[in-house]
Length: 411
Ligand SMILES: Nc1ncnc2c1ncn2[C@@H]1O[C@H](COP(=O)(O)OP(=O)(O)OP(=O)(O)O)[C@@H](O)[C@H]1O
Ligand SMILES: [Mg+2]
Image 1 (cartoon, rainbow, N blue to C red):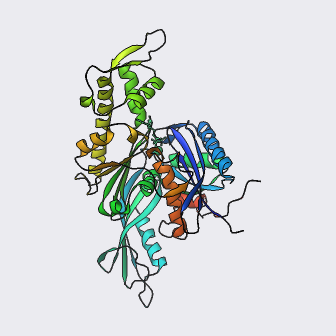
Image 2: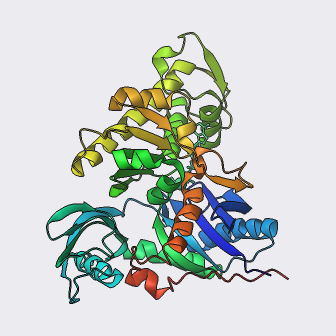
Image 3: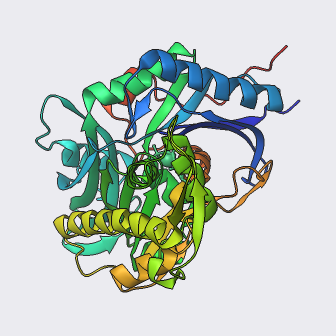
C-alpha cells in the first residue's frame, strides 16, 4: 500500500485548541480527515500561563482528531502567537564562489544565514527567516535566484522572533503530549495561507486575526510576509467590557455579545432593549441594545487605533492597496466589517479558510483561519522539500525540524 502523506496542525488559541489531521492527495490537495476542537484552558493573551492545563487541552483536542481519523499524531506544525512576537527586516549578502557563476540552493541558504545574523537579545529566539526578494549583482526583485548567473547574491528578509521562554513553554506543552514539532509557525502567517488570495498577497494586504486573547497583525506584500505584530487584546476584552458595563457575569456577557452584539450602535434604534442576567441576589436587568453596541464599538475603536499605531511602526501608515482582511472568531461580530472599513478608510472583507476538502464543515468559519493555515503551511514545506527556504532555526532544529512523513497507524 502506498504510504499516506499526512500533515498535522495544532492551533493552541486563548479560547480554543484545534488539532487538524489532513491527508495529502496525489495532486497535492489537503483532505481534512480528523478535527479536534476543545475549549482552551491554560493560556492568556496567546501565551501559556499553565502548562498542566494547556497539556490537558491539547491532549483532548488531539484525542478527538486521532479518533476521527484513525491516525496517531506523531508530529505537528504548531502555531505561536503572543505580544512577545515581533518582526524585523534584515539583509544578507554573499559572494557566489562557483567558477561558472551559477547560483545554487546552497548560495541561497548562505544568503539567508547571513540575513539571520541580526542583533537579537539573548532571551529571544528566531522563529522564521522569510525571504522577501533577492538581488543579484544589483538587480532587484528576484524571487527564485537558484540557477541564475551572478557574482553577488543579496536577500531582503523578514525575521520573526519571540521570547525564548514563551516559545519553549509552548513546545514543552506539545512535547508533553508526546508529539514532535515539525515547525513552530507564526499564527498570522498560517492564517494568511488559509484566507488570502495570491493577488492580495502580491498587491499588498493587511491581515487582522482578531481571536479571543490576541489581535494578530500581518502585512503581506509582493507575495511574502513583510511585517508582523501581535496585540494582547481580543474578543475576551469585549466580553469583559460588557460584563463590567452591564454589571453581568462574564459568561452572560459573552452570550449577550454573541446573540445581540453589533458594532455600529448608531444604527440601533434607541428604544430597543434586552434582558441580562445579574449577579447573585440581584434581579435581572433591562439594558439598552445601543449601550451594548457602544461598549463593543469603544473596544474595537481602541483596538483599531492600536493596530494603526503598529502599522505605522512598520511603515504602513498609508494602508495597503488590497485593504484589510478580517479573520478570527471576532470577525463574526455583526457590523465589524463596516466599522473597520470606516475606521481604516479602505476595502475590508471577512476571510474564511478555503482550498481544502473532507471534514471541513466545523472549520469553515473565520475562527479557524490559523488552524487551517497550519495545514497549508505544512503542505508548502513539504512541496519545498522540507523547506530549504525557511531555514530551520536552531530552536526548531533542536526539537527536530525534519519532516516526519511516516506516520504510524492506530492499531
Ligand atoms: N458570532 C460572534 N460574534 C462575536 N464574537 C464572536 C462570535 N463568535 C466567536 N466570537 C469571539 O471570538 C473569540 C474567539 O476567537 P478565536 O476562536 O479566533 O480565538 P482563539 O484562536 O482561541 O484565540 P487567540 O487566537 O486570540 O489566542 C471569542 O472572544 C468569541 O467571543
Ligand atoms: Mg487564534
